[in-house]
Image (cartoon, rainbow, N blue to C red; front, side, top):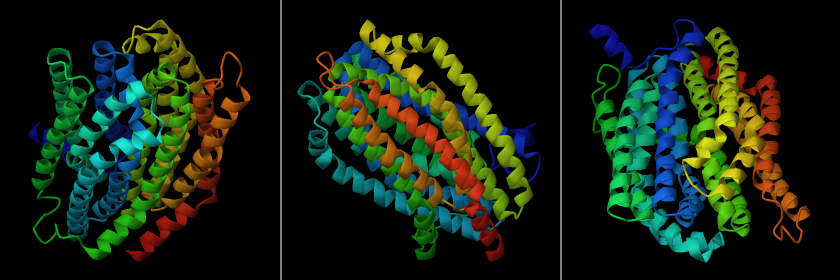
Length: 465
């Protein structure tokens, strides 16, 4: 019994056993963890919407694209770390594994402190740049400034969670995240509903909960002496490891930056429609976060699975796992999308009692529905390519679909639908453009996957070993 418990909370070797079972076993706790992660932002929005009002709800949402853009530093480190960790773990290279993890922890501290110092100074100018409405501006700056002050905790949790997942342990981060999620809910209610701190209370609750989860993850990593050995020497950034992490993680970081920059540009368009559409947009994106969870989950699972098996020189398992994992992701995403279509109205009612917002939100969710299914294919195959070491291809797909398609389509759509009743155009442009970019992204990803550059990267990694 104790052996089974130890195995559950330990690193998972995905180079043995049936690939579908490996991917499913790894994905289930990861999916629950993503659910808990999404609850951070969702609970914030629910509490703000119910206890403060729609204007405060819009303020929290307005700062989202800025935060996502500046978090790209952690995104890049996390992706590079996850790929190297999974490959070294699969190859059973303990020394290289320890050196990689130590380097990533040092880089995380440097980036976190940088954002803590620079972020609060830039909060006001950045919100001005987005042409944030006057009734939302002050609250947005307050929320953004406080979140920046907690960047070290946010960074360490995301990086260390990625490291643990790279070694096949998706259960431990889940447990710590659930603890932090419950703490976040309690603090939200205390700071906002009881003490009346408004959006500031929501921000403080979030960074405190993230700091707790970060500390728990770091303690878990330090105790994994049977898998790795962290010493003072390993915590000094290694030049070669830093180069590899940046080389592998930079394309992913740039991809996130592209998404965030596009979101910022579209956020400016959203702001032009007024506070009602802004509030609707943030609620829809909260529900969207849940719909996207299976897609991102299976994408991460495929990266870990492929990384470990490339490290173990098992390309036969890579191909089998790709087929089974992609089909599983498609089925799960389709099922969840159908549920959201049926129960979307009730989900919207969790955030607001304003009937106009509820009706608009349900309409927008229906526009996005097919796109969620398309993204299941994009994320799974992109995860395969990243796990093999090809992080450039997913970046180029994101660049094409987001910059060359999503942003122009959104603005052209809005411009062409201007009228006396809709002086700024039809708000459908915001999410209709997203649907088009997601659908084309799936098509491009399939084509690049079949082209096979990722296979060459995997074979080169195997030959180098």
